[in-house]
Image (cartoon, rainbow, N blue to C red; front, side, top):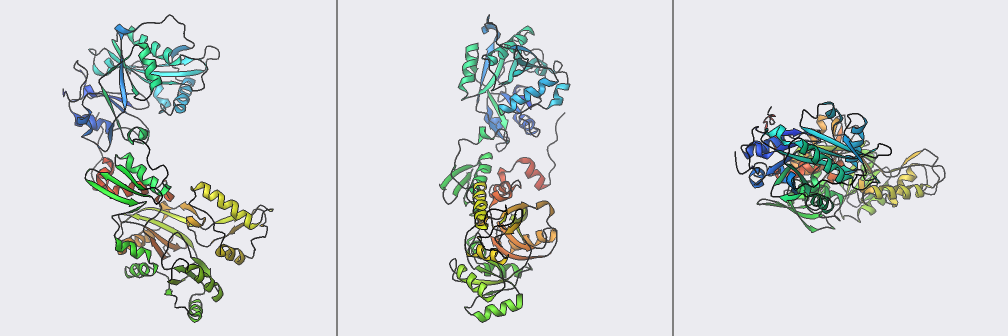
Length: 575
């Protein structure tokens, strides 16, 4: 047996041993001949479970086999030797007994959930726990019989062979609402004494290094720390254990979603400027600076193409992407009149800008276009007139030239209550949107909002009838109060193809492509613009941040994802 793995002095009779505990497995490192097999066993962890690899004296050997998937658990291992145990004459405040597979299971899982622990699948208790080398005890209130605590124990001899006289304690949890004291002590003593009756010589447990209250309890009972380590898999359950101290607490949600994903993978994060969302990611010898979803992988040329809506339209049109009629305003009323005669309705937008600022939609008179031009000129001296395409605003997020997410963006709207003015409804809705998006989304009380309300036949002081919905913006940008609705699973293939073609024509690795469509499930569309810094947080639960970090650090991808993308079969579980 490899001494790189084993900490127990006696040889294990059984190999590759693991105890299924209903919430995950205890995987005995001292039963593996090599680190590679041990790592593969940990990588076979089931969904929503927490496996724990125990008895590893040199964890660096194990971690080297899967450094992006495994981590060293920041827990101490404590041991109570039977020879050091002193029984107590004090009467416990609770009754301790074996768990009943019926109502007790629900109560135990309620306590686990209250303590942010993994719950045990209920069907697990339909099996014979005794035959599986497990003991599960509950503590109950002597007055009403309510379960107020639970603990699980594992008989090591059952898994490692009769020569092993050890056992271990797991999942000690006490109801935070329990009125009795000493529940944890009573459960620990009861479990230890049950194992002593079976011939066990020691009881081991692991506890987080900073859980001083629990450590004090165990030391009082006679437990002593031993030199042993535990290893776990990087998953969402264990996230707080391997990501380290929180960083970038004041970052906006668009940067935070990326750095959280990076930290889950062990990628170092350095905040350069919180206010603007600029940070540096480092893994091994690779370093990438990002501003939210804009990274060094996006070239200055690609960024300038996206920034200039006139140029981006020409570039994607050359790739066969359908684009609306568009002209640069030459300063004349005659041009506006000719454009409206040709297209009936117009969109006015600044040639440079983002977040929907300065854009006016569905303009049908020369006067409205001129007013919109004055607004757009505050953003850019160059103003574009564009054909208005009536339909839905569709954002497609393309990363590494693959569609990752798609969402219909709906313009801001209010619903009447029969008593409030439209202006008051807009103010209330705007406050709700700001609260829901961390201040990112609000409905501007500007000339464009007044125009849209007037177009619908109302003034801002009118009371909107109860239940009537009124659209107060034409653009659907989040920053102007729009809402986002995921449609990734029903986007028409031609829209996906056009979005990817747009990204390739600009040669940009991460981009939000905006189309106007009749329906996300239909092939009709026109290209509106390309955004070099799409808000990835707007598309949860789609894996936008995951695919972004995959692009920056391909070797940080979980093994099963890399295997899937390379055509390799997933690891097969060993019997």
